[in-house]
Image 1 (cartoon, rainbow, N blue to C red):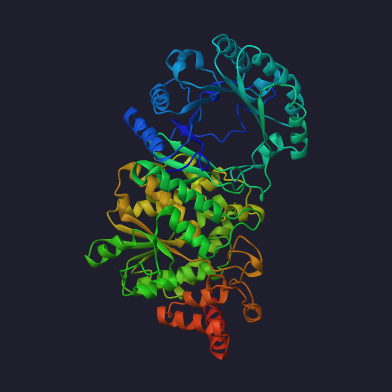
Image 2: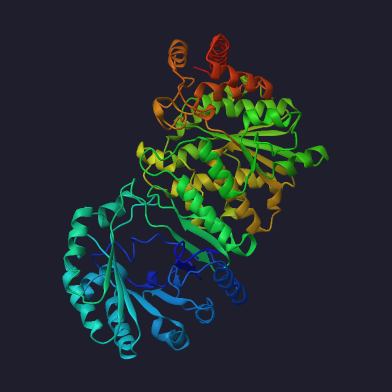
Length: 636
């Protein structure tokens, strides 16, 4: 049982869409509710499921209040709001209805007896300010709602979003709220500043962003103006300043949590309480929040990171004693040297053993000449092909063109170089598939068909774990349309093989694990056998200079094929390899990725590293020689 101290409030989401976007913007407005992270409705449920969800929360927690939010919960269609409110109150919850109030009067009769507090959004003391945020006619509707709710002696609360201009109007808005307190109880007033989380973009920051000190000073200036009303300030947070822990429960049972990081693109999806139980999911969130680093150096690919990913997504471990199958002649110990976790790979291995149609697919982005991580990703594919599996390697030319804005001529030249490089590494293009994305019209058609089953929230959720780091290094500042197109096409690369009737195993870095989950999500909604789409994920090779990953997108993070051989040798020789764990050792992780290194040899190298003697020096010399040989295949 979750105690009241652990979790006092639960947010219930009946729908993720909103009715405010139908309003017309004012002439000088950036648009209606542009500060909001817009979403189509992605909650599909029924009245019985809503009741079961509420009962599950009640039976496993001492939470006293259920906040109905969205989107906006008061919609022009039946989202089971009345059923949910009634059942929540019967279960002993206080209920807080967060709404813009645009349709409140139309549904009020069915809501009235089951709402403890009505939280109304208002961002200014007059139509000039309030309508600038939320559309023409909004403030008039707000005043009407306040009038009939105060006349009916309903308990109120207010939510206010601010800009550098509107924050100066807080005293006038405080007087308006003080007037409401003379007629009915007002519980609280929440005043918020722009929240630049991982989904932010530069334009929004320019419109809505302003100094935190100015915001705090303005809020403090109105605290004494509204007697008996608790005022909460929610300022913009710095990277190292986590947001409060909050839990959201979608009406289909999906549980998400805010783990506090400003850099996180959105809430963490934990599972479904109707399957996993509510308390276990929240306790998993507690654990993840403790593990989740914040700040500029938030991303560290170490044991804690791998454990967090495995725990959160319920992946099965490789190399931690729980894998009990081989694949393509590779033993469990051999698999441990190349991959860290998987989802569904056992089923894929069984399909291989049964002679069913199977294929392994992987891909590389064309952001520049291959770095060490890209090299080893390609070598894994070559090894699996040499072990007898059907293998596809996709060169992400359109991915780089769309997501990275690389000129098309440059992308095509890089694709030519990558094709030659892959063949020189030993890939047999007659036995397998080596292709680009450009010109593959059948896969593009699959992408178009798949897009019907995915929405904006899915793409935001599926951003790879390095997104915050890439932003810090100027690779991109938000998830733009081109990046979503690139992600869609990547998912289609996987799903297209599924449509052909095969079992599909996707091999990617663990930081990209959500791309497979996105493809499975879309395939399931499409009605395809998503359980035949599995993923196997590699550890990340630590970057040089304290960076978490060797990446083409982050200059200075590692070695790549464009460098002179003597420079690569000098960098690897100079690495002092002082990481306290094997996961943090770039040299050991690269050695483990060599195709000829099996589980036994990897263990021997790990022991030699700990001893620090001549055997470790020999391993380092072998590694340098091998990498120089492999990179020499890159067409200059």
